[in-house]
Amino acid sequence: MPITQTILEVAARDPEQLAIVGAGGRLTYAELVADSRRVFAAVDALHGAQADPPAPAPETGGIPITAVSIDSAFHTSRIVAGLAGFRAVSATLDPRWPLAHRVSVILATGIGLVISDSDDLAPALAVRGWAGTVVSLAEFQEQEARLDPAPAPTVRDGGEAFLLLFSSGTTSDPKGFLKTRAQYRANVAVSSAYLEPLPGVATLAPGPVSYSLTLYALIECLATGGAAHMADAFDAVEMARRVSEEGITRVVAVPALVQALSDAARRDSVGGDIERFASLELVVTGGANLSAALREGLAAVLPGVRLISYYGAAEIGFIGDSRGGDGTRISVYDGIGFEIRSAEGVPVPDGELGTLWIDAAACSDGYLAGTTDEVLRGPDGWATVHDQGRIVEGKLELVGRAGDIAVTGGHKVALTEVERAFEGLPRITAVCAVALPHPRLGSVVALVVEGPTDVVPPKDALRLLAKERLAPQFVPRQWYRIDALPRTVGGKIRRAETVALVESGGGERL
Image (tube, rainbow, N blue to C red; front, top):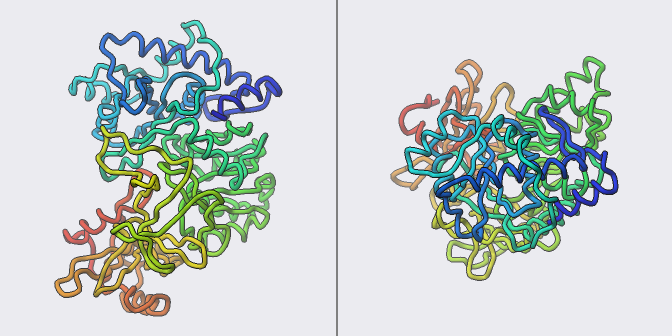
């Protein structure tokens, strides 16, 4: 596993090189090696003290699973990094997940130890007969300080699992899947070639480590000998301060925080303090179809900063990226196979919508049977997370998941493409295109606009804009206003919940 090999090599060659930095502390590579021995000693003792330990998911090969579910990005990062050099499987559970979700995944995957400061978690698990252990971060640190350190970490076999991740935790019970060390070697190879986590580079990755984007940023930094600067939450003011004080050259963040970074830089440019961002060279963000307005806004205030928007799936790994325009056309990375297939699994002609299938060495073997019966890989070994798209001139155009496609009057309409037509409307925070039932057409496209009554434009103005920017079958037939769209804990709009809200009368018909 590159993370452990690199940690040991850098600790020997340049022991004072920073490895992990956060609100809870700073660790050099030499200190991270020493810290990992205390981390594993505490984890091993806590698992070993259980009289009737939970059986880990069979897919782990019997390796005990430790979950970290705390707000501290620094401590989460050092624990995950520390366990990587030992026989251990780590998981990060978002403490903001609903209690029922956290309990469900712990029981379904056989997690045996949870580091959590939530008062309600241990009682909820005990009621379900779980025989594992929940400890607070403070209690875990007491264990670390009390016990003798474990032997030094080692580079382990590539077939061994080391990370347990989850596909979601917002609208349904999350699906669990494992990453082996070999699979992540392949993922780091792709990331290193395209996303520039270079040796010695100071990368800021703000936000919960339970987000795959943040977790992967941590792993790729340590796998290449860089410094991973972590932050507990998405905070633009704090991010700007740390870019200046820590000499950050690379930021990995969700699109909403890239917008916040642009806004912070714009304020600084007016106040004459734009030099705070002088060290910044590259911003990497996840998600396809990045807004052109976001790219242009960043370029306007920080013209020397490059922006890469990558597309990937946690189950599969990094797939491709876009580096200009509205990001709708993605260049797939070398070595990654991709096809668009019909519902019957047959490849479709270029330009036609269908389901994206991927062939990648970094892809997980499948979902844990205890969490879902959904299949990740087909019989040919290719995988899909049911993203919908088309191939145009050798590049990939993504339009969302299966639920983001509406069929109206015989036409397939990508709801994400409808939404892009309304980007940049002044004073409107967000829109959501949905498909609503229709007796004759099967469904019709409707647009739900977020904002107060005195801000949302009238229906006629919205319709006129739609006709200027969209093909006729894409123009919404119904229009609604809503004070606040339903969102996930990470801020993504929930399309299905928006439909339910409109159908129950929760939106104002325009």
